[in-house]
Length: 187
Image (tube, rainbow, N blue to C red; front, side, top):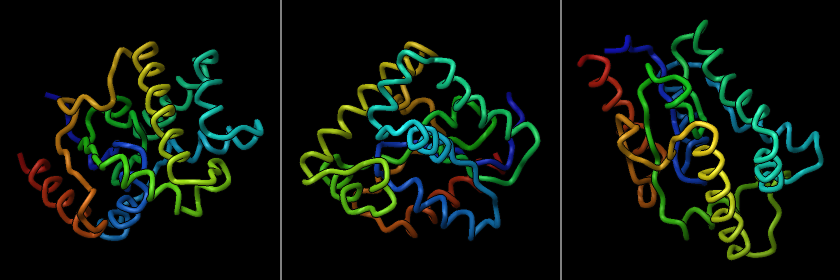
């Protein structure tokens, strides 16, 4: 059995609440954070691409994708007591408490469309356009992750804890994660 670390890796559906929930967990646990998504969005912006175009670009540049995923594992070597907000954080840091956040796709599209932080790399006129783009990104990511790592991020057997955030407040989600995390640490 792997040695457990005081690290929670948050993965999940697009707009399931990873960013919001991770902020609550950081405050409640007094943990740090590592966000792969910020790194990817920064690279996309530097290349004058929206995030979906950047995902398409990564198909032909696997070395960039590998570096993005490797960065979380490298960080975890020297750090403890932090949250990983990354789609493949569970894969990069298997000794972490692996959490998957699920959400209804219509709710996710609404959340993403109304999220001001996404406007730099995602700009759509309607919620329907946002949803179509999210579905495209989901497929692109799944294909890329399978080709590079032979994993499916939505395979729930990869996780220690799965929670549907569709009808829960971020605070309730964070509380349920903490409860499961503390039980996992004790086990």
